Amino acid sequence: MTSIIPARTAPSRVRPASGSSGTGPARTVAAPLAPRARLLPSLVAVYRAQLSRARVARIPLLFVATFQSVGIMVLMRGVVDGGSEARAVVAGSSVLVVAFVALNLLAQYFGQLRASGGLDHYATLPVPPAAVVLGAAAAYASFTVPGTVFTAITGSVLFQLPMTHLWILVAVIPLSGAALAGLGAALGLLAPRPELATLLGQLGMSAALLLGVLPAERLPQPVGWARDLLPSTYGVEALARSFDARPDWGLIAFFLAICAAVGVLSLAVATWAYRRAAVR
Image 1 (cartoon, rainbow, N blue to C red):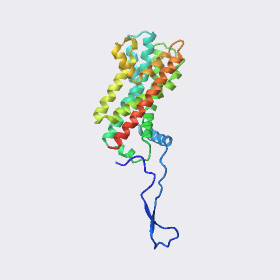
Image 2: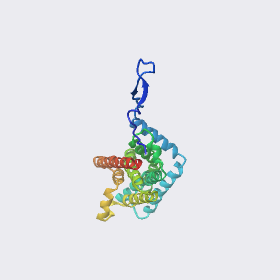
Image 3: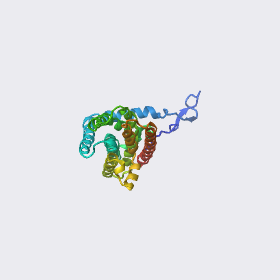
């Protein structure tokens, strides 16, 4: 399989020597190729292509992800009155929309892309591997914005939480989306079969549901450790604490910084997994 990184020079071509009539001895001249595509323009191109490709499925996708999260909040309304538990339910349900798309569906997409040979198409393009992973992750995460905002507003009304600081979603959505999309892409690219990629994506989304929506203080200690390993946990914590009457912005910034670090790490792993899958 050809590499996605082109060589700096093309194979040597035979040309007549300068000033020669064409009948004398020839010499080889290396013809340079076009420069390699830069990361940012390549990322934008992949992002637009993925966004256009999935535009038809956007409305059903948003409906399923949002309806699922709103339904969970309605069910939890019967057992949760308010306080920290209500904040955890609303924050976890909102970030669950991101997990459904960025983790579950992206794992399925890359698993099917690898199984069908679709990675060969990207491997022939002179674009960096990071652009393919980041572009697809950004496109899938973009679908979650309306559903996440709607879920957060609905939950705030349902549990009578203040909506003053919901602007924090501007940071929570992209950071949580990056962390979960990187994990989803890595699962899809590393899974040997598309069925296994689908299973791993479903398990990841179930973990985000059970460990994100339930209040942390209600979980057993071993389960709490597993919750700390889930990338979406820190986005949930940041959003939940923004519902406080006097939010601790230093702690919220700390959670967002952890979420950003996990996002960079997961996207780096996904890029490595893409390189590994593309050269096989």
